[in-house]
Structure formats: structure tokens, C-alpha cells
Image (cartoon, rainbow, N blue to C red; front, side):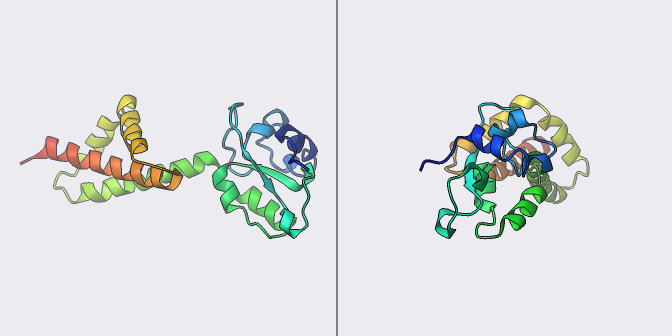
Length: 176
């Protein structure tokens, strides 16, 4: 039997799971990750169908045996655990936005550590003011995406590109 369609999973899980996830409206449930909310407001987003109880453990392809998760959350899903444990995991996941904010903080922590090695105390503020140009940030991220072949490499490359960009900017603007 083929796996059910995403809309069928969302409809079937409305009462048992989706009512416990207040940030996901029924009309968005089939195109949103139920753990981190990636895809919310984006009808073109396609989450994966994740078994609650795998076929290997006797699980079925019944719509009530599925969550809809983004690829990252599907990898982190505690497979093999009871439905109760998986529901607790589902409700405790940081949102997609919270993860991105944490990632951005890690980038700025790297840049701050590098800036601390320079003598000018205001250099970090000057750089961040320079960085607020949206097209510059897009350019750095695009450069990182040209280097990558997967989500984990992409994040490493973004960190590298921002740190490299800061170092070059600091050399050009603060050569003594």
C-alpha cells in the first residue's frame, strides 16, 4: 500500500495531534513541518511523511501513523520510541525561526571573537552597520551556496564566508 497524501495525513491527525500544535492552522498543516513550523505560510513547501511507528516495527501506512516533518526534523525524530515520547519530542522542538536565530548568533559570535583581536573597540559595530545592506548579505550567502553539497555543509560554508568577509573588510578598512 502506498503512503497516504499529505492532506489526508493532516485531516486524519487533526484531532489527535494538530489540536496540540496551536500555531498550525488546519489549512496549513499539509505543507508545514509539525515540529519546527518550517513551511508555514508557504504552500509550495513539501514536508516529508514520517512514520510514527515504522513498518519494520509493525507500523502501517495508515494516515494516523504519520507526522509531516521537514528533512532536518525527520532526521532528528526519535524513531523507535513510543508515540507518546514522539509527541513530546514534537511539541518541544525549537521553531525553524528559533534555529535560524541561533545559527545567526553563532556567526556573530565568531565574528565578535575575531573582532576582539583587533585594537579598535568599535570595529564590530562598524562592521554590523556595514553588513545591514541586504544585497551584501545575499551575496555572502550565495557565495556559500556555491561551495556546498548539503545542508550541514551549507551552514559551515555560511559561517566561513561571513568570517572571511569580516577579515577582508577589517584588513581593507583598518590597515595600519
